Image 1 (cartoon, rainbow, N blue to C red):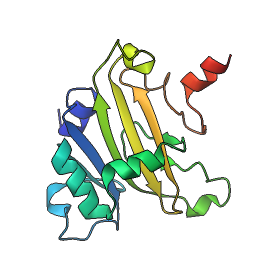
Image 2 (image 1 turned 90 degrees about the vertical axis):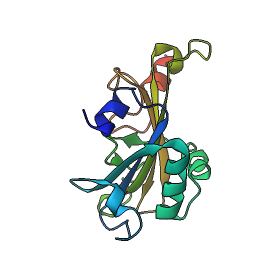
Image 3 (image 1 turned 60 degrees about the vertical axis):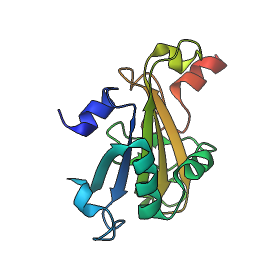
Image 4 (image 1 turned 180 degrees about the horizontal axis):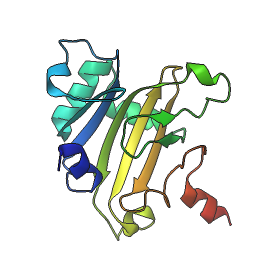
Length: 162
């Protein structure tokens, strides 16, 4: 099992995942440390080094980016290689995921909500249009939690309203 699969199964809570779309990386920046995927590169690295790598690659402090992204919900693919910008209805052709920063937390019954249901992935994306957005889901319940494809609100927020 590779590092990304292990992360997505909830086995690497100490690590963060960085996705950088094709053209985002300077060849000398991090490319020798990443694994190529169809539309970019993935880096799985321990938390503190990952936050520093994110800042080196994007010029943005990771947790500041995450706080900004949390203000807007949008779907991020469960493989952490893309997303659906919440502003995509304006001009769909100008919306591509430029980068993603993600981490996971172990199940925490004391916190409740999603955290009582299992390990949770937090993912934050940046679109080429400038929009930052966030998604989170329970590992093992990816289609029952978080923002689903074509939606801009999480499944759990829809069920809370009913």
